[in-house]
Image 1 (cartoon, rainbow, N blue to C red):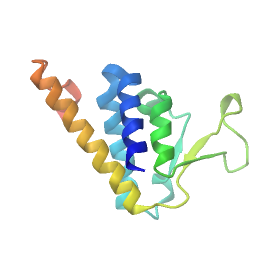
Image 2: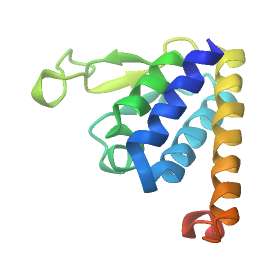
Image 3: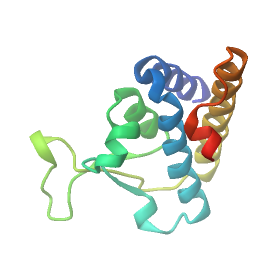
Length: 133
């Protein structure tokens, strides 16, 4: 499973370009929230139509694939209706596998740290989002 997670992170890097750090930060926040409050349904459900989520992570197929590899599944609205274009309305995590989520969190955090180090070595310094964090 670890290699699949790494593969999705590498693909996300290639797809997202300059938005890679924001994508990782979003994924990290999602995973931390579930790990801290695994029984809280609102942290185990992601509305795919959420503009902020889409802009930061959801627009990248590899970002969605990463979440799916961590246990998130396609889900429709409570009334059974799909989202726009017949696509799923949500990603839902029916079972919060703490070990798998923690593994994903460690990988995402390490990838984020590596991205910051590469940026600073190139003389670009940390991205603005990282400097504000």
